[in-house]
Image (cartoon, rainbow, N blue to C red; front, side, top):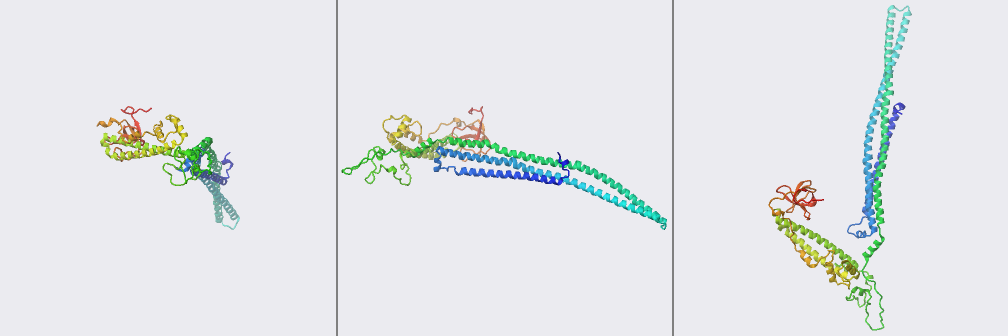
Length: 556
């Protein structure tokens, strides 16, 4: 089955068919390109949708995501974001593996097709030229034969006429011979041209055209195979992301299965529990007897008072029902006294935890400055120790302020917990510090909290002592005047501008010597040459220690 033998006379139709094949390929490329645009658009819309419903930071929505149902919804949003990423992968892979390759293949196909049909037209033009030459020699042979016949007839006529002179007859005879010779020459030329044409025609139909058409056939078959391979790739690109999309969907199912309605119900209790006991029965007040009206011992105000004076409003006790009265809106008191006991306790505990974190942060900063000052004292050429005094004093003052603030909130917290017997009993069970008799007072609660094993609170004396800046023990390596030996090398991961005394500037990618490891303060001592050394943040360098070097640690 060959186009060269079967379609030897269908040059124009093959030209139209191959052009149609290229058009089909370009149409498929356009289809895939539009699919990639749809995938990108879909991924963008999914990402925007996921972003739209993400909880806003520092908002009420963020607090709502404590509930397992909201956590599951947040997991769904995150999984949908990953799901969108897979559609972006589909678009990228289709672009790189299909549209780009096919576009390049189409250009090559067009050039090859143009070259093949150019060769075919050139062969056609050559055959047309040979045919014209054959026709020309044939017409000349025909004309010369007719001229020779007329000359022969004229000679015979002159030779038969007795009135014609002998010279005229001879002249007619010579003319007839010339014409006859010309006819013979034309015959030979025509025969030669015919033989040449037949040879060229045989080569054209049995050699040139089959060869050209065979190339065109191979070109067309490559196009068909390529579009088939592209369709397989089209399916494989989708198939490759199915496992990951399946994991995204599995993540959504797993998050949904993790929803715990009991846990959410408990969170609602923790969020809105007031800590009050339900009010008891209201005693009958007999207005027929001249007696002073009093509030029932079982009323809400009495249960809330714990032996404290009752709250009276305008002569009548409204303390019994005040939880059901709308609260006045205004500025929130610093001690959260506008909240019910349980909610107030949670707010105070949250505030105490925040203050403790800030205190720890300031203490870490103070320790780092103290160590740096000690370095300056032992090695004055690295910096002036007095330059750090102001900052050290400022940090110490901040610590003192934060501790006083924390003590204030701890006192309020102890007072609230002292009013909640249930929580007091639970705290006694957890700490083992109480004898289980009676409700502890605010001061005893504060003392117990200060000595609790969780380490969140310390005694007042220790807090006062910690305000003072204590000089920490430091290595004795600076006692020697000789430079410290290198214990390894390091590579700068980022550029660091060492603006403070004792620090050294480094450039990203620079290789330097390590002369002292990080002692836990976040600084590593390095050396560039004999005269340049200093500290850089440990996170800015990648350290390679020499195991054989003195003082180098061995990591397992």
